[in-house]
Image (cartoon, rainbow, N blue to C red; front, side, top):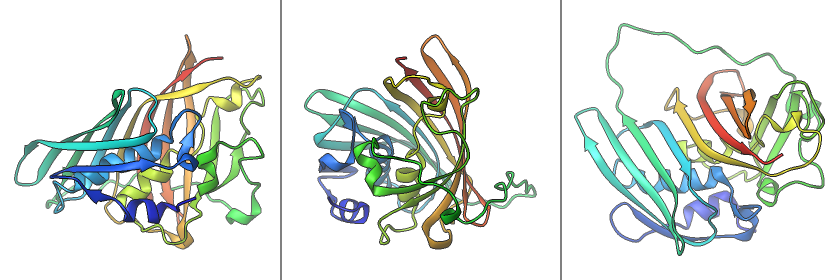
Length: 261
């Protein structure tokens, strides 16, 4: 079972902005690659083309299930003095399985300074129960997730609201934007606590905005808040927030989820 740092560290360029790799079975989520890893691999390819500016936003469309041998090809759509837009496609033998758009932006002087809300006050991760039980998806073995508030999946809760501690089990996972993408999608969709019976769910799109280029936290732990804001007609829309362990805002996002239940 290759650790995250081994998987990312072992990637080899296959041309400008292109990487090729094989997704290990233990990084699968049902019949597809775990979405956070899909996004992280696409970002790694994009960063080969823009290595002098931090990523500011990611827009990911999970087009179809993907696994095994894959290639990611990225293209600069436009580059200016302080920003760049890069597309990245993950391709398997069945065609394009994920399409991403990354926005990179250099820091610039500004008279404005508005901080996003800080995280709620929480006790230490060890004070909360483990989120996944024996029925955890395969990829979840790479993460330590604790439920600080809200409900567990498939408990018939009135609302889909989960406040969580998240951490890579891999102590060597580098504190980078790629690593952050790889863990930010690790909780199941926020609508799942509202479900009374198990049923398939599938992420369709994911938008993430990086609030800082200082990706750092204490002991690898992050705080995440995932909230289902709408669930109707077989789709759920949710908001996502991510903070460092001391409550510093790091990422916000949105996700569209297909619900087959």
